Image (cartoon, rainbow, N blue to C red; front, side, top):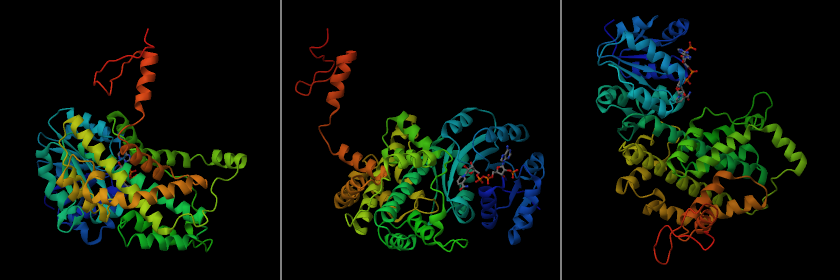
Length: 466
Ligand SMILES: NC(=O)c1ccc[n+]([C@@H]2O[C@H](COP(=O)([O-])OP(=O)(O)OC[C@H]3O[C@@H](n4cnc5c(N)ncnc54)[C@H](OP(=O)(O)O)[C@@H]3O)[C@@H](O)[C@H]2O)c1
């Protein structure tokens, strides 16, 4: 076999799917896995694609199998494993070669790795779309040296999802910009999922709807402006029956959500950047709270169950509008956060490009993202909720969001993400806020000073200052 174009380490869920995708697009790929048995069984089951896959048993063999300058993708768990693999590979590689971390790295780690010097280049790319995306076309967000990206871009564009002829693979910026964008993508994913789950709860606990009926509602929503992968799969999940019980599978799934940390990273970085993303924050908190099942059961026993029947207080159409408003607000916050990071770190991230690579392949793909790409292209610095198309969408839907949140609050349904969206919306359209009281308090106890509205003078103190 001639030399392979690219190498891949880690034949787990994502790595195996990505390797098959690369081979299918006509690029010979050499693979290595810590457990060699997995490498062998992977190639044995690769069928027609096996001729484009070179299995290797050692890292030396992997490196030797590649055409210089070499490029090796790491698809292993984020964190220490990536550092271990870089340390093991680097001495075997040559100047001009590159290592590409395609896992869900923390962007601070990617910054560190990109800055660590050495002759071997380093790229951090975020890959979204789960196993199916990796196999048939993920969304790819690259960060690092633009020259390194250009070298592997033909392969990345070929394997990525396609949105009406445009590949969903793009360069986001230097250092950890790609992994940062992927992190915010995941934060938005948490928020989208949480808001959908909140409407599911209203239908289940407030309207007494069986899962099968709820599935049909999601199907209807997926035919409208909420059309998205997550609404689509929510309908499928709600409509799936359990072979063991004969009832809806959803009804026997434990209500404790797992997480691998990217949502939490988004919330933490947002705080560092002073970029408010309250809908994402609420979604992360909700996942944490979901895990406290014993405490929730104890509190329900002590105070009584919270959710009460909604008795027609809200309609299906109003929930759809509330979800639409929540989504606009959440994405507005997410894009603003990326813009803030781009300015802070000097990354020069092209926000419309971010929206464009999210239009297909990734978990948050939706019809709305195409409109977002267009709105951001017109005015990248304008907050999305102020773009005419989305401002009109919010104007049309925010009353329903308020009605849904109000009915939920009055009837004991926790809707933290939708509530956070509404509070953000209200705070953002309050020109005269209440922080004058906070400034007064700060001056009272700490002489921090305040600015006067009437004279414009800064550093003023109240008469309480001694
Ligand atoms: N799953 C998803 O939907 C998804 C989506 C986007 C991004 N990601 C990211 O992609 C990366 C891989 O995820 P995955 O779901 O494919 O994981 P996975 O199925 O658990 O596979 C992990 C791979 O890493 C290898 N590995 C684990 N520890 C290692 C070590 N100490 N040294 C060398 N190799 C080691 C494993 O080898 P063995 O076979 O020897 O155990 C396996 O090949 C992660 O960063 C993840 O966050 C995952």
